[in-house]
Length: 183
Ligand SMILES: CNC(=O)c1cccc(C)c1Nc1nc(N2CCN(c3ccccc3Cl)CC2)nc(N2CSC[C@H]2C(=O)NC)n1
Ligand code: NI
Image (cartoon, rainbow, N blue to C red; front, side, top):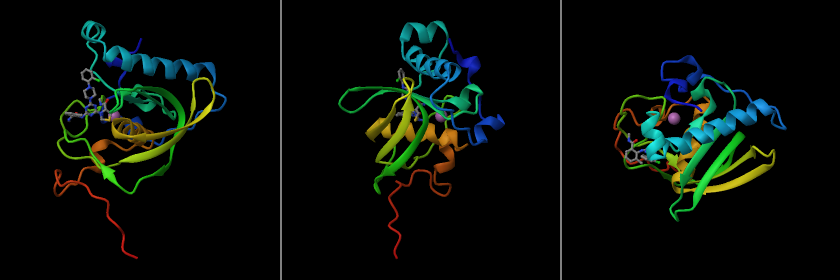
């Protein structure tokens, strides 16, 4: 099972690389990796297991964070309706998104960042994500709320982007609003 020693921390160059597409249909090795990432998130949210193995709780993880530069992400969270959202996706891609932006009022945390980075992180309020599941099927997810935010955070990791890259440097707490570009 993955533990915190397998999590790469900021400063490691792999977190700033553009990760490679996974060959489809997914090979056994990549399927194993995706399953271990999802298992880590579930374990990290289980009080006993998290305490026993000193896991920091997370709802999202990207493959570069475990030292493998491949386009694989895992998300395990619940949405506003309390519906479980649990996915491991190969080659995830945001295919469309709202103009509206949103953000987590508490800011964002990251398993690869062992410090609090204050500030609001602008995210699209709604996104449509396409990707391939562990079973090899192509799916399209219409996301909003926390799932939408987590998928954006994890897909950013695949492009070497950290959440704090998106915080307004001048005023980290100015509520991000969609800038309507005038023609
Ligand atoms: C600095 N301020 C903050 O972190 C922050 C501060 C307040 C509120 C929020 C909402 C914040 N923000 C934030 N909180 C989370 N968690 C809330 C607690 N939870 C959790 C904790 C315990 C058991 C089970 C679980 Cl489930 C784990 C997940 N997760 C993320 N992110 C950003 S997208 C990827 C995701 C991630 O997994 N990060 C490790 N951001
Ligand atoms: Ni992260």
